Structures are given as structure tokens and as C-alpha cells.
Image (cartoon, rainbow, N blue to C red):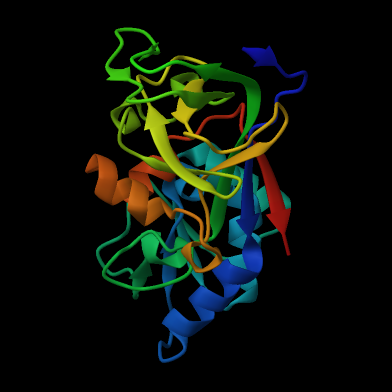
Length: 237
């Protein structure tokens, strides 16, 4: 394969989407509490808590005592409960704040991107990744993307989940490896360094995290919560 030089793993979180969704969900409520366990479902506890406080959310549920301390140290003024929502929690909000609940339509707050690190043109019937669970049906271009199960990308997505490579909609091709996965883009064009969108905004023509959920049979909240620390979080205000 033609090799690239840099490796970028990015999750961009649009906090304006979080605030707007929260404002819509709480408009008719006297008070509300947000479930921010698992680092706000992988979106980042502190930035999300700030945004939700600005939107009028009055309390938070977090996973650990350390999370509650981090909120206090950051100056986030809100009720904080550790471990699980109290029985009398007013209007508990959770995955729907981030567009992760299919029964409550809302725009997604996260866009996950990897980077192409290699490109190779191959013949028909070429086995892809270990175990050769996928073989090319015709001459195709394969791209190698620098994201893998060590980053929290679920191996269940192998041969199933949609991805966007430039103008080409493909899918994870073959088994996901520790640090990378492959996409068969057919006759599409790509170069090392190009971004690959795993999930983002369906309104912009990208696969969404709910598309991933449908493809692999795992809730969207689990998919984003599993994303690891090697993935850089970038925030839009």
C-alpha cells in the first residue's frame, strides 16, 4: 500500500447542538437532571456539563466520585449524584441529549473521523484483513484507516458499519484490527491523509451513529461511550 505520514483520530463535539437539544427537551420542565455517566457517553464530562448548565439543566448524574470532584473543581454549580439517578430525580435526560436515542429525534452531537494511512489497488478475489472474512468481488481500491478496537471501535462493526470516504459511501471491510481497519471503495479516489467519517451528520450526507447502531445491533450510547482516549476530542462552541 502507498503509505501516509500522519495519524489523526478525532471526535468533534458540537456543544451548540447539545445546548439546543437540551433547551428543547427542558422547555416545558420546571427542573431536569442529565445522566452524564461514562464521560457523558464519550462526549466529555466537563465541556458537556458546562453547556448543559448554560441550557438550564439543574443536576447531573456521574459515574464516579472523581467525576463529581472534577465538576466542583471546574466551578460547575449543579446538583451532582454519583453512581445512578436518585429515585426522585426530576425529568432525567440521557442519550437523547446527544442524538443517540432513535425514539426521540435530535441531531447528533458527535462526528467521528479517522485518517487514511495507506491506499492500495488490488485484483478481484483479494482477501482483506486477518481471517479473510471479506474478499473483493472485482478490482478495487482499498484504504487503510487509523482507527481500531484499541480506540474503542467495536469489532462487531466488521463487515457491517457504514463509513464515508470522500464522495464514496463504503463500509468497514473485513475484521477491525487493533489500530486500523480497511474500507473497499471500489473505483473511488482517495489519498493518504484524507479523512474518513465513521459517523457524523446524516443531514450532511454522512452516516450517523444511529446507522451504526442499526448495522451492528448495539445502542448508539454504547458505541460513543466506548470511544477511547487516543481519540482527540475537539469542541465547537
